[in-house]
Amino acid sequence: MSEPPGATVLLPEAPTADEPSKAPTAQRVLPLRRPGRWIATAVVLVLAAQFVHGLVSNPFYQWDRFGYWFLRPNILDGLLITLEVTAYSALLGLVGGILLALARLSKSPVLRAVSWAYVWALRSIPLIVVLIFLYNFSALYRTLSVGVPFGPAFFSFDESRLATDMVVAVVGLSLNEAAYAAEVVRGGILSVDQGQHEAAAALGLPKGYQFRKIVFPQALRSIIPNYVNQLIGLIKGTSLVFYVSLLDLFGSAQTMGSTYPGDIVPLLLVVTVWYLILTSVVSVVQFYVERHYARGATRNLPPTPLQKLRTGLTDLRARIRQEAAV
Image (cartoon, rainbow, N blue to C red; front, side, top):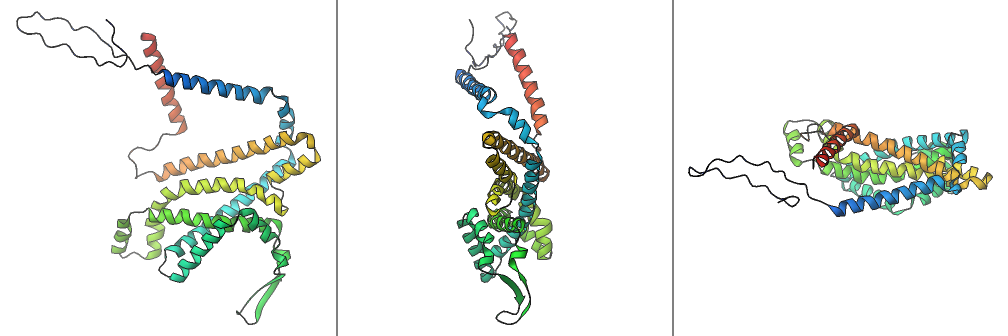
């Protein structure tokens, strides 16, 4: 008589003195059948196959034109501008976010109020509005000067000459990024156990040393995942600099689409694939950075994608052998 799947196998009782000893019969525990999982897997595979088939077979995508545009100099020049804007804005935004977070956590009511007001304002205003406002900033202030407040100026300069398209894009994105990074950094600092602060203070360490060597390294474990999300959003947000006359990746594709209206779809696919590549690279870097800072916090480091693949193949082989034995 066969056992139902997942049935518990009871061990044979020990023979008594009046009963002859019997050899135990070999029994196996059959795995549970999960038809719902197999049905869901089949449905997903069918939908994925149909999606891929549509991408490959639909002539509307014009994959030959996609290959033509993918590595064209105009597209690569726009990609380089996207990378430059992202790098400068991410660095300045993170530095500004750290300063704003420290101001928000300081004991000075003025610093706390100014930091809160900045974060509140920049998170409330759409990024496109900030960029367009900065692009037209010279209409409000033709010259900028540095000197004594309400007094003589030491030197002044023409704002229109300083505010190039690249500067406007980087400043606008950095101001917006700093507001969001400030909350990410503040949350990371608050996640550090209060005992760490008390232990560092008990050792008589200076405040700056406490922050650099004790608090901030521990806060990075919480900051990195959230800030990488912001960085990915920043990469995609650079597409808005097209509206301030800076031809980034999206702007270059948009310009080429105006010149070659029949290639709009292939150009959009080129932009999509390049953004997918950039965000994938950032995600891979995020994984290894998180894995680095997980040392000492977890007993076992999370497996790398290659280790997961090897483990999955080993489990699959074992399952196939088990099914074949049945």
